[in-house]
Picture 1 (spheres, rainbow, N blue to C red):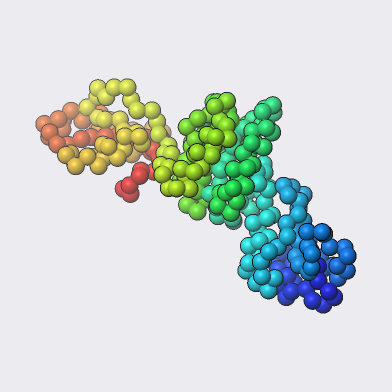
Picture 2 (cartoon, rainbow, N blue to C red; picture 1 turned 135 degrees about the vertical axis):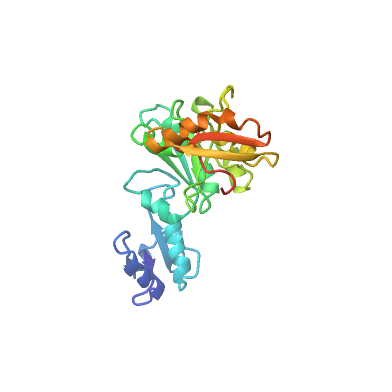
Length: 276
């Protein structure tokens, strides 16, 4: 809402109103007696139905880019439920997105969300926070490597690359504001390592062919002491099964002391920390 004398509303305000007419309501009030007390003179106020309810614009009213950023930054709740209806807003924001995967029927959901809002506020415009129905959107959780067997769970996705995700290593009742704050602090400082999809490391490797999983990929494949030959296969693929049988006869290559045969199921392998 622009509070200015008749005909004095900034051009940038009118331009933005035209651009955002389908998603936001814009208005002009010429009678300053109707302005909120927080606005001692003319200016622009953004009203919303969440968090602080009202925010006074402190920037240059003639700077359309700055005004656009102000509206965008204040159009998202500190921590809202994310769903197919509003996901695009977070995707377009292109900021890291922290998900709280939680059972919507959980009696502790509301209190946990409220405890995380101060963290979300301190990281406003740096990281977006949301909570998501872990029951309805379990498949999305699996795609982000979220451990859904002990809710709630936290994962932070780099929306710029989409591929990088960071899973908090504590779940369930151990999740609290302190754990989340420490986790996000490590992310913003660049000290977190992305979580990679991996099958469990085999308890033993008794066959001639080494079973390779993501957690050991760099250790095995980039071992400078050996040449490594890796088969990426899918169990349902006929050609892969035939090649798999050839690989099982890996003992034929045992006389090569510096040669290592490995096999791995492609769908069980995340992105390596180094490019293949």
